Length: 130
Image 1 (tube, rainbow, N blue to C red):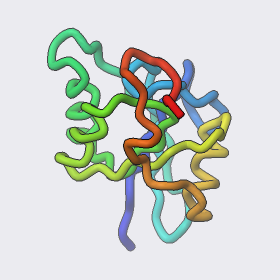
Image 2: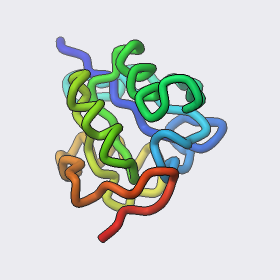
Image 3: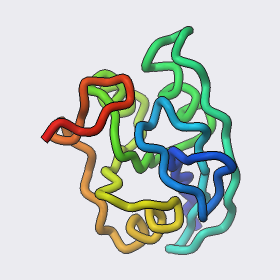
């Protein structure tokens, strides 16, 4: 049984019913969902880290160091998207989901698109530039 850890930027207090954090690097925390064979095995939270030391790469490296393989995000800039690609974390676009639970359900159904440059913003917490 292969397990995958999916991270979802979340509003406080985190968990499956938490609202999705609008921008991955500026969220309150991450809800980590361990999944195997199409089922949720475990749900935990992981505090976010400040951008000051390491800039946009600080949260990227923080998630990689905690075993994350998939990130579901509603917004991010080009630099962190490239960073996720470099550390082997696949990024999927939240595509309008509102809660962590909705994001996980969409992931399990395979309906979330890969996060591409079309979804990136200018950084700093803004919405995607379409």
